[in-house]
Image (cartoon, rainbow, N blue to C red; front, side):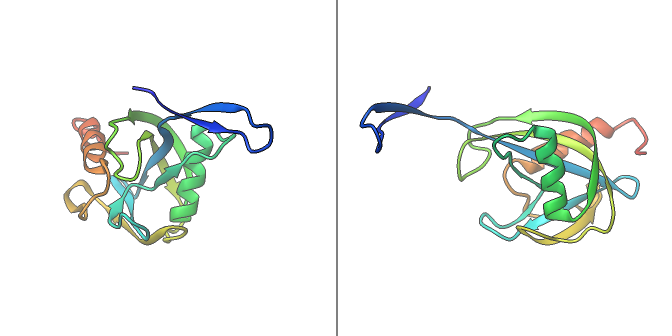
Amino acid sequence: MSVKNKYTCQHCGSEMTVYRNPIPTVDIIIEVDGGKIILIKRKNDPVGWAIPGGFVDYGESLEEAAIREAREETSLDVTLVEQMHTYSRPDRDPRQHTISTVYIAKGRGLPQAADDAAEIGVFTQDSLPGPLMFDHKEILYDYFERLKGSPIP
């Protein structure tokens, strides 16, 4: 179902149709210390633990957004390893309909909470904090399922 609204241009008076579309985002599963991952505790609503990530800026590729968001929220330099999956369930973010492309990355540096991250932590599958925001529990389940049967580098 396409949602569209009619608006009148303030400058010329023409009627315009504006479509309401899902917003592209990225999430980055940052691997560190052989099998551990970085999560942030969000500073802004909704507050809770999350995979680092955020909105893609206009004129920015998904890969550029992933590297930027990782650096902004964790202070880490990352190398993207692979694009894992895209999550698009309309209710995945309670604020609005987003579509998130998830990347797996290797992190370098000292993790420090920055930007809209209040805290940062290094976790294993068995030590994940709660609550996990959005659909990040599902994303991390999928990530750890991918690792089963293969040694973590």
